[in-house]
Amino acid sequence: MKNDLDFSPLESVRAYRDFAELNGFNYDIYASELNPGPGTLMTCFDPRFMQLTNEISGFLGGLEFSFFHLSGYLVGGNQRYVQNATVIKFVLPRTLPHFVINAHLNDIHGSVLPTFFDRSQRVVLEGDFSKFFGVYAPTNYESSVVNLLAPDIMEALLMNAAYCDIEIIDNCLYFYWPSHPESGREVQKIFTTACVVMDEMRDKLIRSDIYVTSAHKEAHTHGKGVHLKRHSVTWAIIGAISLSFLGKLLSDMYVKDSPLAQQILITTIFIIAALYGLYVGFKKHRLKKELEHRNKVI
Image (cartoon, rainbow, N blue to C red; front, side, top):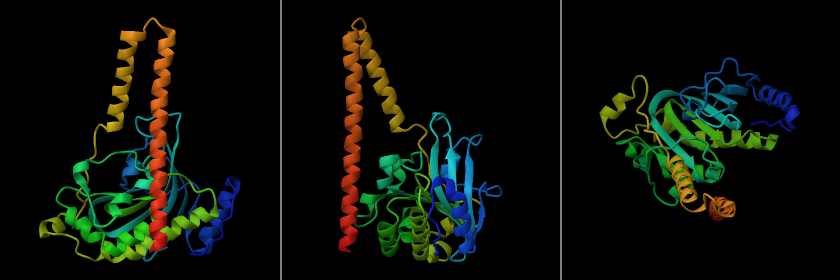
């Protein structure tokens, strides 16, 4: 992959255009013809405010792809907070079951996919892979995702894709990153990650029989594939509601007429939230160091 990207935000349009021309790709700042497809991330955005920009498209390894920036407000989310993501979408020549490979090192920012899948669909793979990635497959398709994620593919993901989420849905494969790139080096790393992973997975995605039964294979011959079940209510929402209710209850019972006690209660809640944030940050930092050591040894 040829790289001619070295830009400040104000220079990014010209840099993306030059990068596309250098590699024989197309560039469209407004992504006017882009169809984002069935990816779960896109369905989480309010379509009235979703913006797709800086599309680079063409073919990589014989597969049609689109790179683009995604911005907007989440459905039912805070409309003062803009959610950003960078996406690479590949179009596959066949329909596959819905699989998600969620990188735990992204969770420090909040997972790129702002939704939760039913934990009964989680698949634990061999070795230390599940320490760094959460893998989800529809019920009865656990063996299919195991067949897809052969040891060499898991190793490629651990070495190259520990900071992005991957989703296979219908006839599309998506790479998701939790922000927009700020330098040419970051863009080059994004494309390199996608190329390395696709080189390892291409035959499995296109040709290999990953199905356990002929019925599973037949179900994906035409139309949409079998999809994952999402949680309708997340534990984070339940926890926030419960904490709010507990705070209100304690306030009414003990501190209603005491401004000092109210201040102490509010401060205590903020301290608990801050300590939890520090704990999550420390946990991810330790996981990052563990991955770096593992990959260096290998």
